[in-house]
Image (cartoon, rainbow, N blue to C red; front, side, top):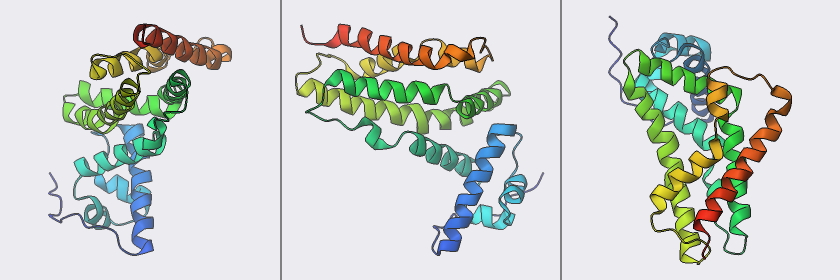
Length: 216
């Protein structure tokens, strides 16, 4: 068993360092999706990125940290914080629909589904801590931002919600439907109507949510 070099992660400085860091993240993302966490080595990441293994360790410290940064970078690219920007002048239903449509397209994206499958494969093989890292950087962050938006809407009298934490969970459950699970299991028997079904699922989910939480 090879012992990883004991080096502390260091922040990138020169533009060249930033380029190497970006290349490492892209390489790691591709390998984690293709081979899952357990099947991805730091040697493979270094080779894919065209850098030395020492460079990978100097930027990220160990594989756990590298995985977390891959997930964090991916989530922030796909769902930037401004996605949950609350506009007091906007119709709350339109705001929720915008978020719903954004999320349902992400959840059903082939590459994202591949990431979910890789994480589940690692969990099945007895590596639940990597699923936990994914949960912390993905859904936990997303729910926090959604809770903040819902609370703003409650404070403005646009929604009547007693428990915004529970309401956030309900919102995301409603807009997902079964579409993501169908993709996870490879059931795409109607690709010609998939886009329309995604949009209708998101709209129906928002309508149901509003019927529950619009002020009477």
